[in-house]
Length: 77
Image (cartoon, rainbow, N blue to C red; front, side, top):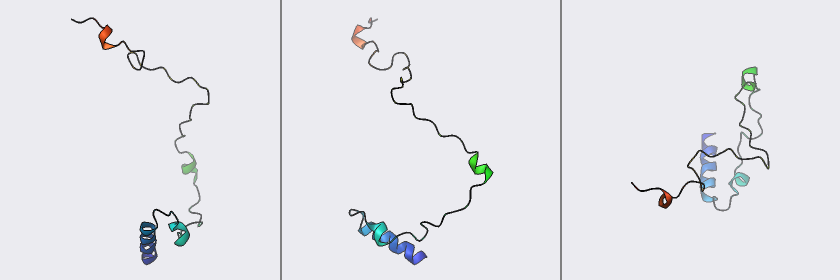
């Protein structure tokens, strides 16, 4: 296993620009499934939802963005 992992690493280095290292030396672990999900795994934190298309962005804090008063318009003191 260790020798094959090292071979995959070398192939990945040599074929980086071509992008075909996975074709030449595929992972031995791919498609093995993994462990089954337990009930504690399903109670993971929910992912943050992306805003829907056309949704209004959140308001910017005062003084931020292009609406801010230019420094030249402020009274000098």
